[in-house]
Amino acid sequence: MPAPIYNQGDIYFCDPDPKVEDTVGVELKGDHVWVIVSINRVHRGNAVVGVPLSRHLNKAGGHLTQIPVYAINYAPGEDKLNRVGLTDQIRVLDKGRLRRKIGTLLPAGLSAVFQGMDALFGRTVITAPVKAPAAKTADQSAKPAPAQAAQPPAPAPSSPAPAAAAPNPKAPPPGTTPGNA
Image 1: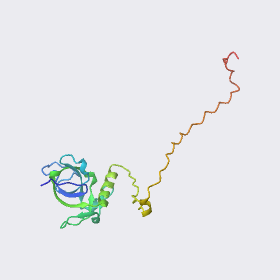
Image 2: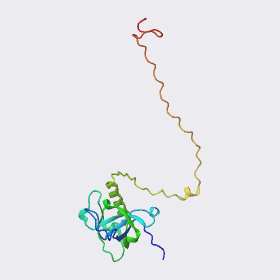
Image 3: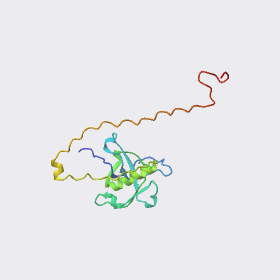
Image 4: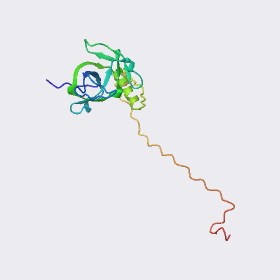
């Protein structure tokens, strides 16, 4: 049986520290739903990077982003719940601890998690809207594009020559010192 492939956006139940009893404060303890945020080519050995998803919507705000149910493709039989990406709890997970896949985040849900991570790390990301390429007409696809002559590079702007200084009427003539003029 081939090893499972873990993809960005996959959602699994995972208990990252089943035998650790020293969690403190807001650190997660126990079994939670996690989304994989790393991409396949950077998964080192048995590691993936994940963000936990909470069902407690009151946690949403700031960098903790709400992910609506329509942005999650749940597996059949799973409870369809809105989630909150706990982006401040991002961590490395061992693939061996990923128990059961319960769904996949759709692009809008994954984007919400990344926006929360950007807010957490103080990044301002400006994304230009993606435009579909223009469709070619039958006439355009049949004719090769006309060759354009190479244009020489534009000359660099030259800085103006420094203006000559106006003579100072109180200055001594050239070649003399102020005391012997």
